[in-house]
Image (cartoon, rainbow, N blue to C red; front, side, top):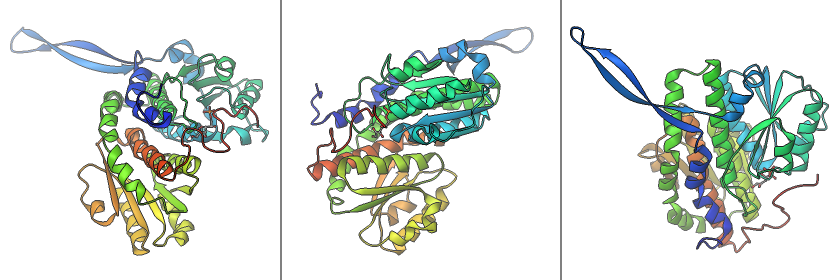
Length: 385
Ligand code: F6R
């Protein structure tokens, strides 16, 4: 049942390309468009082009509520909350709707301001998380429209919502969430594209480019998975560590949080994720030759700034594991370990950058002899507070 893999977690990491195909099936569609082009004289020829688009039935069915949302509040816990942080950036960029991302446990006890013009998105793999369920019940009382992003079909949260989108990644057995995270991020990207298109807040060019590149992500994920052996090797050299820092900016900041959570959960090494620029405001004091720092430093508009963070870490003898874009020559020279990712659009990079961090956590935990599928003190669904 583990499909030849030693653990469910590794199997589920490797399933991700297939899972995302399933998640996008019937939602990312292509159609052929014929346009008549005038040539010399009265002659016309036909030009055929393929256009890609996103179709989400939840949006077709609840257009009014979703397009008129004054604000979106995302409620979730743990890894699902990290996916929400990526969703916030996508939705704000492309739908121009303000988004707040809340820990469900804090939201439900805070007497939050919620109105009927709000859309609350609940993200939950299991669909049974007690705090997330309570948060949507509370939001419902204020008349907000509730949208669920779940994996388990027919789960309590799925039933409590007004509409939603299943991530369709199949059952996740490993306690540490892997394929559910990339599935949640994919659905949030689809949601942002679909709402942005309907509202006219995304340019046609961005809409086409992102949709096409998203469709190509599973193939690129397969390339990233080929790094498994390399990551297994380098993981062996980091089992000594008692602490890890993870840094990323923009779309990669939630990935840093997620990488740190994965390592904590299964290897029991203390790890913290930070937005890279926050390093100067405290965590830099922790850096010495014993401190591994995982930095996501792909080629995007923050590249130079993240590069200078790496230089600051190296100046203090920290050990840098850098996740870079293929062909990077600058960081490769200064980092201790370099993991190269295929190029994609910046907003889609989390789907690729997450994979080496999942593998790193997995291999470090295996090297330490830990039970990766059932880490101590953790349950797959947290149905009590
Ligand atoms: C982390 C992990 C947890 C869950 C959290 C929410 O690997 O599995 O942090 O993400 O308990 O669970 P769901 O998504 O089922 O609501």
